[in-house]
Image 1: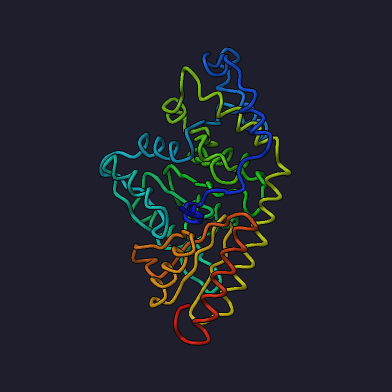
Image 2: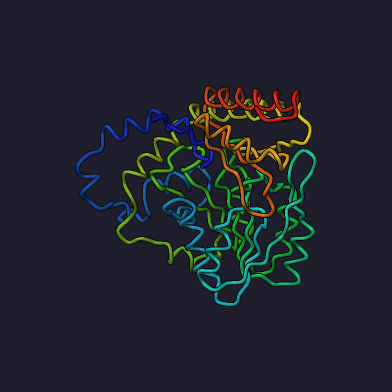
Length: 352
């Protein structure tokens, strides 16, 4: 039975850094059988201590979680009450509305703008919705899934002036694939007390199975800090893996550079065929608009060749597919298959 190449899950198929495997080889009995004692030093963990030092913020403002999904859930459950509103992107991760539904919150969506080259945020629209709906929570994804576009830094301060006392959640789960700067973290959480910036080790650091994430929180989110605290500490093995990943910047930077080059190859491929649009992305995936009549043939062709990419059923993306960037060799394999399929279609007007 042939193994399916999954390019539909936005996982980092390069895998974690070699130092992470060294950690696993050297896990001690104590790390498995004994609770963390870091609390005795007045910190949550070695990981939160390291992240605080890297970002230049107090350790108390680093909150740990089981992936960024967990911290998102905790934040929404902590602050959104029944009947209150959360403002969230419409063309985005379905889970944003689900987690609001869990606490009987009301989701108000704002639309992202489809441009010729990339999607973009309409900051004026978001500001207007903040004024008219007075949301309790405002959610921004940067980069956004599945469109791949980021929220521009120059627009963020403008938006923050319009949110009132709302809790703003900036979901940066796909950080790292188009630059690794963290310079904005300290200034943002220092200036905006109700801001929560989500990060994860699942995507860029390729540790999805370890389920470790964190957030940088403004000083006004003390209630969430208490809500998210864990007296007995966190997963010591996952924390050790995360620390090893943080010590492997050169390894991950090279992956980011490989993905930048491969994103360009997808842009170039689809630019040769009418009716297709491959949107520019800052993440480890690209979104592709395809002719409606080719959706099923392309899906069948790729399935036949052992490759899975994401085909959407949602109305906003009914004629789109999202391709997760794999390794260089995996991307070459898919690019070759797509080129063969589309070349036959272009020449003969029928699928390969």
